[in-house]
Image 1 (cartoon, rainbow, N blue to C red):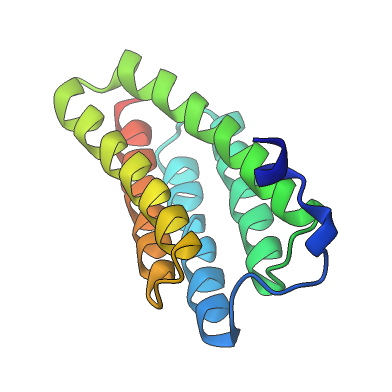
Image 2: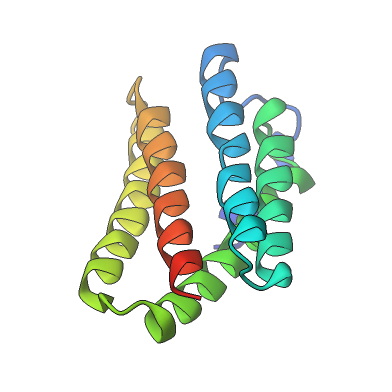
Length: 146
């Protein structure tokens, strides 16, 4: 785990090429959709702020994707956001099994993107984009239940 989060020996070495980076910065900015949705629908402002920071940190990492403090911040804060969303979702969403299925897709896509990246698979970033999209869907479901 330490090597996964704090591999600064490779600092400055790109994690993604230009195309992959553009795709992932785009999906990072899509986290603004639940921020706006939450503010319009009167969900707790703090939750919208948490999602806003998630979007900014993710965008910041993917605009220059290297092993750096930006990556560590993205992973740590994204994990925090996942935990908050999971707790709020399980306690608020009426269709808990559907929500849990969505969460399992989030986890699967994240793990698949990491594994395929490690294996050198050319389209690993598609799994990571799906991870972003399923996360956004789970966040929207959670906001609608608050």
